[in-house]
Amino acid sequence: MPNMSLTKNPMPEQCPNVRNKNFLEVTTGYTAETAMDEAQRCLHCKHKPCMQGCPVSVKIPDFIAYVAEGKFEEAYQKIKETNALPAVCGRVCPQEKQCESKCVRGIKGESVAIGRLERFVADWHMANVEETIEVPAHNGKRVAVVGSGPSGLTAAGDLAKLGYEVTIYEAFHTAGGVLMYGIPEFRLPKDIVQKEIANLKAMGVDIETNVIIGKTILVDELLESYDAVYIGSGAGLPSFMGIEGEILNGVYSSNEFLTRINLMKGYKFPEYDTPVYIGKNVAVLGGGNVAMDAARCAKRLGAENVYIVYRRGREELPARAEEVAHAEEEGIEFKLLTNPTKMLGNDEGWVVGMEVVNMELGEPDESGRRRPVKIEGSEHTMDVDTVVVAIGQTPNPLIKQTTKGLETNRRGCIVADEETGKTSREHVYAGGDVVTGAATVILAMGAGKAAAKAIDEELSK
Image (tube, rainbow, N blue to C red; front, side, top):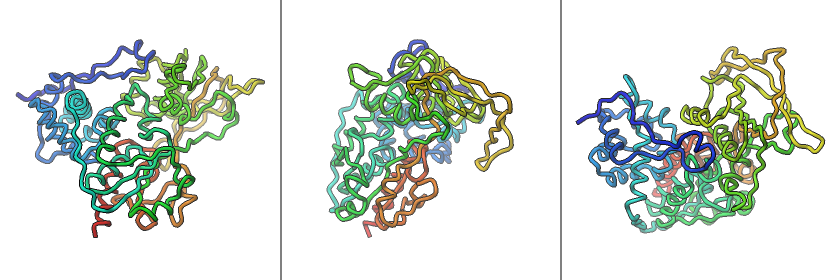
């Protein structure tokens, strides 16, 4: 019997005043009964518009049909045909801007909860099925993958399925890239990421950690041992505002702040010896998902007052609506149309305040968003003792500087074909944030999938 409800089944979650004091996952997931009920909201449209919004082409109506019948393992296997990381995507993908934005049910109500169903299916599989991994026969060719984030993991998995001998080179001591160092435990539990990585290893993918490409070994040297190289090293170089006082103690880049908390388990200090200084009043500069993550972490680590300081208005916030809502529920205060101009320090070199100015929105800029304009005479000071700068990241220039003939653009991103990932260097491909700048997990995965296909086509000639 179809479920014609105009609204999604709500996602169970921890109470805000409880979860803002722990790092347990905020949302607790659908039950089997709820998942089956939600799946029955799908109309199974002939043209499958939801699939048009999925960068990795998950066969969405097909897996949902299995969920509606209670065939959860069949649903999981259907997702896995094109998506190497379903438990991850079900949690962190912006479905509301991708697959769910195309859902016909969204015209007169809410779309089908595609992301929540994907998460349920993946979690059910992990809890109930003992994974059996088939190792494909090697085809005699080797591919090196630079970076073990979502793009690199996807490319490696797809190539391994095709019989390639794949080695991933990761700069950090733990594989997973931004999934491990960037996204907090309360949004993406790290054991889930490591289970997905363990599956890749079982397929025969080798992962070499503590290897910095461009320093430990060069791309040119990799090409001497491998038939192709895929660069999916992400965008890990933090951006700063360039204002006075950013070098003061107590001022973090979002990269350092989140890496210390997530990858180095600073949230478990002193069990893990990674102290993270948190003052009483914390300002997070920026309005994206990274800013929301940093602010919510600061609150959980004991800050009394946490502010999101963003120079545009609410409608212009680039973060997911769900993340903004969760942040507000947890007590994060939004200082919108506010722009920092200077950080103030004491005699010991610690930040103790921040000068800001109020803004108003003027005419649209080249990005199409209305440009923020300073309101004269609105300068004032905020009392803060910790600042996290979360205004964006760019690719680390090391690979660009040490690789001959590799074309990059003015932002330092590698220039690569959108459909194939081909770069200006023969047998070198690239995708994800190292090409686009900081974007989403699923877009990076889509780039890894496209490049794996192109590499196979090239090497199979």
